[in-house]
Amino acid sequence: MMAHLRHQSILALDTESDSLYRYTPRVCLIQISAYADGANHPSVEDRPVVDYLVDPLKLQNLDALRELLANPSVEVVLHAAENDIILLHRDFDFRVAKIFDTQLAARILGRNGVGLAAMLEEEFGVISDKSMQRTDWGRRPLTPQQMTYAQIDTHYLLPLRLRQIQLLQAEKRWREAQEAFELLTALRYEENATGRTVWSMKNNREVEREQTGLLEELWLWREQTAQRLERPPFKVLNDSVLIELTNRAPHTLGELQRIAGLSSHQVERFGRDLLQAIERGKRRPLPNLPPPNPRPEYLLTKSDQRIFQTLRQWRSQTAEERGVDPDIIFSNDILLQIVEKKPHTLATLQEIPAIGPWKAETYGPAILRLLK
Image 1 (tube, rainbow, N blue to C red):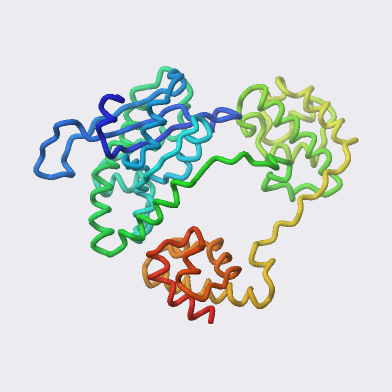
Image 2 (image 1 turned 90 degrees about the vertical axis):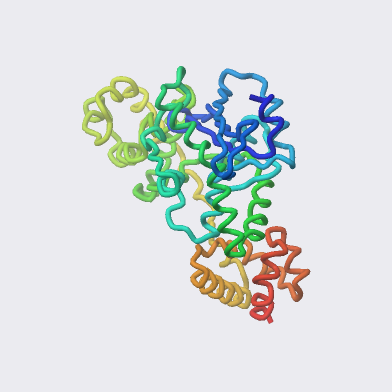
């Protein structure tokens, strides 16, 4: 594979992980597609493609692939690149130097339905087996169905890229897309300093404040059990069961059997541990409430809030005229940086890292008028 790829200036890449099956998910498969050597077809799009499946659970040394992806002369084509880039950096310290994101290109073009399965069906008539998305990619051997699904994920990205480049150039969006792709190369995995807490549960408000100590004890038991079993927490007990256990606080195994969503097998396996956790939880101090997390714009002065809302209205109107989502124009974070910096020239506007020359030239005059 590397003997082939070292001579390529472009390749397609995707990954599969086992996040539905492990407490600590891993990248379990890396798919790579590249044009075959010696391809000589009248239509560039019809050049034959070679597909590779790399098993990082078996291969201990991926240095050659790491070096290849870090080469700025090699363009890597991904679909919805952000998650793949971050996971590859986390697991293997990969850094991708040059990126083409087919989903981002589709969004810049104002396309509806930018999922890969929908695009492959529309562009190439290929039906992807969506059931494979929930399969266990950490199990070996992989099934023929898994390997076919994985292969399809990258096989068509190279011809899709060619079609999108033609459209981007025809609609004068090519420079915009290139700037957006460049921003993706800076993505890195960052360990969450605060970590997961009981307040991460979306439905914790279904528990009264005086019961949150019990909820936290059950939540901690589930986290520890999930880590020990190397399973996702929801496959130990789901959130709704934790809420029900907290609100009803059963005392016996028989009462546990009557908890909605708790199976007989779970009661048999975890019942005594759960009852002990419930007793500990009754004595546990109430956890501190999470710090308030207001939307960043609410931290602005009233004057700056007015500026921010004015910029948002301009962004919404501009996005509607272009037929794209508002964040394709600017994200809220970039608008907040504009409010904070209050640039007076295109040069100072472009000092904001996420605003490249194309966006400064295209949207800068309107932004400066609004700020003035």
